[in-house]
Structure formats: C-alpha cells, structure tokens
Image (cartoon, rainbow, N blue to C red):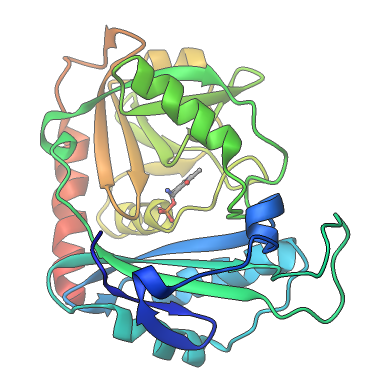
Length: 280
Ligand code: PMP
C-alpha cells in the first residue's frame, strides 16, 4: 500500500499509522460528513464553495465546525503534491464515544481525517459512458454530504453489475441525480439540470457549469424533468469533482442522441477545461 502522508486530528502521519478507534461514530453509525475537493497544479478548486457546503453539511447533522476556513486551507494544502490533477478527501465524524448509543455524546471532539490523491484521467470523458436508470431509494437529506452512503453504493453497484458507469436516479417519475454525480440533459437545444433541493447533493461542478453556461451564452435552466423527458434528450451528462463532465451515450441500452458525445457537451467541456486552466 502506498504510504503517503495523511492528516488525522492535528497530526500529519504516514497512512499506515493513521488509526481511529472501533468506537468512532463514523465506523459504528456512519455519523459524519465529507468533502471531495479537486486541486489543479496545487490550487484547490472553488475551495470557498466546498467549505461552504461543508459548513452546511455539518450544520445539517448538528456537528460544530472544528476549524475556520483559513485553518481548513492550512490543514489541506500540505496534503497536495502540487503536480497535475489531485483531490483532497476530507471526513469529519462525531468522534469516539465511550459507549455505543445513537444519541449524540457530550463533550467528544470530532474525528478529522484528510488525504490527497492523484486524479486518474477518465477515458469515459472522450468516449462517453453507459448509464442505467433506477428508482432513487435514498433518504430525504441528500443535500447533506453524509458519509452514510449505502444507498448510493447499492445504486452504483447495480450500474456496475450491468456494465454501466453510473445509475441515474428517479424519484416519483422525476430525475434527481446520479449515484455519485449530478445530471444535465439537453432537450430542444436547452441545457437542464434539476433544481437544488433536499433530494440532491448541491454539486460544485454543477454550480460551475450553470455559471459558465450563463457567461458563455449557453441556455441553461435549473428545472425538474421526468424520466420520459430524459429518455427524449439529445444529450445526457453526469458531473462530479473528480470526473468533471462525462457524456452518457447509452441509457438503459438505448443510444442517447446519435450515440456519441454531443455538440453541447463538446462546447461546455472546452469552456470548463479553459476555465480550469485559467485558475492554475
Ligand atoms: N451527487 C452525489 C450523490 C455525489 O456523490 C457527488 C460527488 N461525487 C455529486 C453529486 C457531485 O458533486 P461535486 O460536483 O461537488 O463533486
């Protein structure tokens, strides 16, 4: 196992020496939140947006934020090599209580863990990927970036079992998001993405795309759409921090558009890549 330096509760130490108790509430209950923050050439991408989402996630589970934004940046920066595309994984749990009890423990410090990793290039960006649709069986607080990911995991694995890269989730006929991504569709030449709600994670990549579309004259609306609408789309994309924008070229075995990444994807991907470059 690669023995890189990671951060745990105030210390930088080799990965194989980073240990948490089996009584940690992250381990016992999945009681914690996380962030995934990309960094390009050592520069954390939209750090303030990620830290704002972290603040919202912590507030959503009633866990005090242990650090200021300046402190977070100082903690995370040394975990980057500064070379190429990387990402920080940051996790905060409600700490280690003396006994297992669902209710919050009193006066227990949170467990804070962070590590940096390279982002491997994803070939699916050029070729497009297959996706399946599934009934969204997750809970009603999907806006919180909780480490409790069993629903997402089961949805993603169902996709992988069918040789697909992502599961697109549908709640009461309405498309929510991917198992680990947000979703965009192009219908009648207009880019659509579901509005923010408790049913989706407010993706940072999603927000950047909505902003870049507005700045570059690409019509884009934050609007709900149905599974039937999505089935008629000329383009479908999934977006996330580590994969950026990925075109879906096959949905439930049917070609999306002409079965190749579409023109709006090519335009937006070029804009996104140029934007990334401009921040390095
Ligand atoms: N939705 C879910 C459920 C996710 O897990 C993710 C991140 N993998 C996203 C959306 C995309 O969020 P971001 O663009 O901030 O990575």
